[in-house]
Image (cartoon, rainbow, N blue to C red):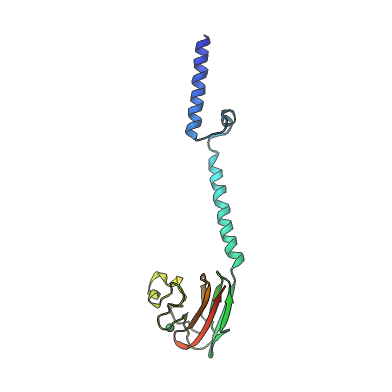
Length: 167
Ligand SMILES: [Cu+2]
């Protein structure tokens, strides 16, 4: 009788141990018995949610938008100092079209990654180049991610120039 009991309880313990090992749990057996199996699911959700919130909050809080107007005598103001991650919005306040783009005319390659030949590709959203004329009251925005002093011009009227200083 005693041997049978011993074997039965040993078998139970082994079965418990195997179940725990297969669950990947390391805490003492007594506590794990109380913990139901579906516990890990909420933990995964909790780990994902805060990361997304932090990213969104970081972008929302730190970036600013600066406006450069394009008038019949050029860009106003001609020089703007911004912080990395800030946006510059170019607004055409003239009656004719303008096309803000990175120096140097006509290749537009001064700003890292920019090149007028990318205007016909999917990379056009990533470059300091409007890639098209802005009509009156149209605007075009670019987020500056590279520190430096970046000269630009109006591709339709290259004597109009300006500088964005990114700190
Ligand atoms: Cu140009």
